[in-house]
Length: 129
Image (cartoon, rainbow, N blue to C red; front, side):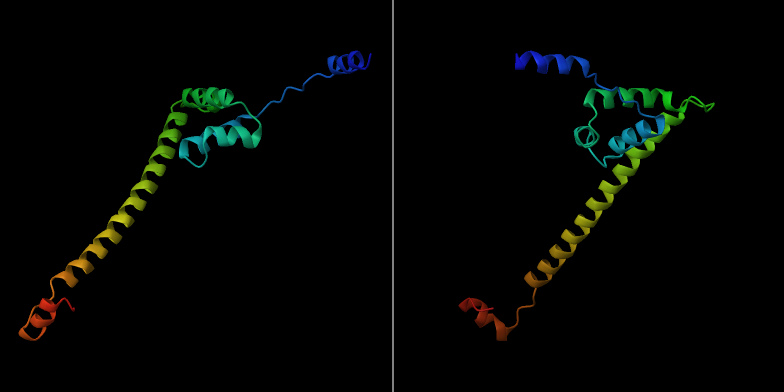
């Protein structure tokens, strides 16, 4: 009896369909394209299906969110800009790391190339530096 009442209550509850405006969709797609967050992270954060975000990405690249503008290629260009900005960030990080490695290598080479004189030759033979 109790189970029947619960089922009846559930049948009356309808899930409300959410709608999202084009600005929100574009913001989500741009975050994914820029690498600010993954598709799965945004899906969990906003309670949106990852499949839906994938659909929004396709619509964004086709220019659906920019129907009011004359040039539909704007969406593709914005995605390309986001990808390039992400790539520039990665290259800057890599460049900094290589500069640090070069500095450390230079310091180590200077230590290895110390001048051997007659006074410190005996110390080197004995293993004392």
